[in-house]
Length: 262
Image 1 (cartoon, rainbow, N blue to C red):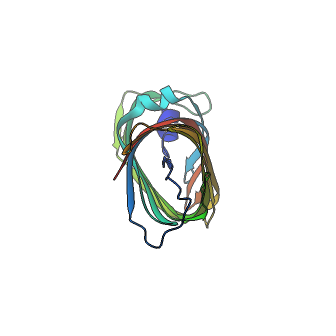
Image 2 (cartoon, helix red, strand yellow; image 1 turned 180 degrees about the vertical axis):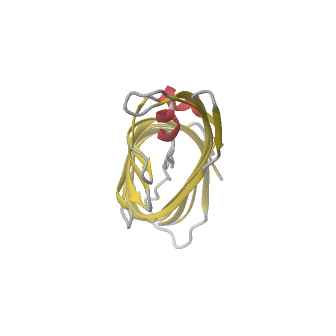
Image 3 (cartoon, one colour; image 1 turned 135 degrees about the vertical axis):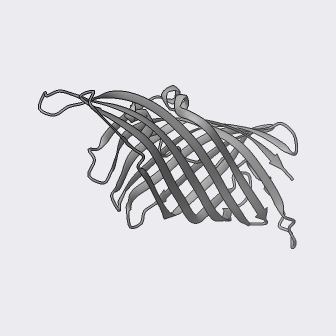
């Protein structure tokens, strides 16, 4: 049964894909609001373990292709609003995954019980932050403070066939959500006309979230004054253990997005 690929895709986690904001060499008294919307995609590989209540932990070691096979629908996008040194950021990610499988359940080498499983998983991952530009000039630096919200919904249909004599069907459901405060830093450095490098890092922890951090490196290309193409690589780690739900996972993979400025 491919339980690993189903449960492992629980967090497909969200990425800040912000493009550089043009720095001003001469301060001005008034600033206009600037906005950017960035639809993006992220294809992570997963490695770690997860578990629910008293069930045994499931070890996970999957590549990006394995994860993508289970995705039925996803939507992801980042938003940024800036006025002078101050900014607001949001990153929204939703994914629906589905998988099915069958196998034999047996104890002490005895006769097996045939089990068929259909599972649907919905993942919500939302990050909200305020930003302050602590360093202006050629290489602007932003500090960020905010929170990350995660919600996982799992619906299952399990059919058990006991020795070919008795059939049992169950449809257990489970959901868990939590908030984690985060703090981070973002650096943008131009390297050529229309090209710039992006570096981003954040860290968070709270009751239940033992550790959480992510690192992003990328390159942005200003195709025009209103459009930017963004490519990068993201590493994300989260270790959550609270209320019977455990998720200790490393996720890493390439990102791609297009930013629209107005």
